[in-house]
Structures are given as C-alpha cells and as structure tokens.
Image (cartoon, rainbow, N blue to C red; front, side, top):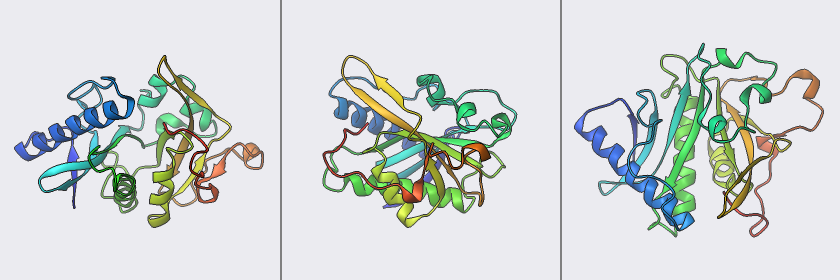
Length: 234
C-alpha cells in the first residue's frame, strides 16, 4: 500500500482525486456501518478548511483506508469538532491547568476502512492510525509550522482497540479519561465515548497536579484491550 499525505487546500488534480475518493469511501463506510444514509456525500465544513490534513492509504489506485486531522491554531478560541458535536467534551475542562487556546492541537476524526476489506479491516484501520502517529512523532505533520502539542479524539471502549494496537507499534504518551463519559445517542443507537488525549511531546502534563493521584484517567500504556463481546463499538 502507498501512504499519501494530502492537504485539504491542495488543488492539484491528484489531490482533488484522492480527496474525492476519501469522501466517497467515508460515506460508504459510515452508512454501511449504520445501515442508513447518515453521512452526507462529499466534503463537510471541516474538509473545506485548507489546513485539514488527510493520511490516506491507496492500493491499486484506490483509497482503501484513511483519516483526517483537524487543527486548532494557537491563539484561536474556536472549538473542536468533537466539542461542537458533543457538549460534554470540553477540552478546557479536561486540561484546566493549561491555556488551551495557546496549544497547537490536532483532532483525529474520520477514520474509515473500505467496507469490502472485511477480513483485513481492523488491520488496515490500525495501519492508518500508526501511520498518522509516526508522521506526528517525526514532525512530518505539523499544525501549520508548529509541532503538535496534543492530539484529541473520542472513542468507545471497543472503538479504542485499533488505537491501542497502533500505539503498540508507534508509542506515544496519552491518557483515557474514563471519568468523563460522552453519551452519543439518537433513535438508532446509544454509545458511551471516552475522551482520549495523546501527545508526542515528552513530559506533557495531561492532568493538573491535584488530580494526578485521583484515578480520573488511565494512562494509555496501561489501558487493556477489551475482550470481545464486552461492549459495543462506536
């Protein structure tokens, strides 16, 4: 497989074609998962931001897995996609000891795998995540010209499995805030999500000193992959 980094603002013919493949794959994958036309075709509002970055994997000319990173520039007060979608996800509450607006952070979203790749789907998703982690660790992906301070995302207990497997090959410090439950629900499903914070920066302080020993989060390296059948993925 060929790994490709594409910027949303890249208007070259190849980039436009790759983004279109990713948008189509994302729509097919999400709608195949939920059985309804829940995800719109084409780019959403975050895909239209020039700094949004895609990590895509292509095989035989087709994108078969990929994800995107959304960026928060230092000095901006704009909220993350997850904060807008889930009011219970508040980065300022998760990092009360830091000036969140001063951080250069990225939000992971849109991880998809071709629904036709059922046998290797989990492996492909893990590979896409590991590739992203490697690119952030090496500085190949930055927030503009600034190294990324922290990566934020949310996942269900079973949905966290690909990330745990990716971190086994590309280590990065992080924490799962099991004390902060984000409930995602509508008439079709209900899923509990956990906020997850990762950082390529050695010594990044995920918790304020007063909460370090209070059991409010689990270091990602100590988190155990859930057994099959114990929870529903999100």
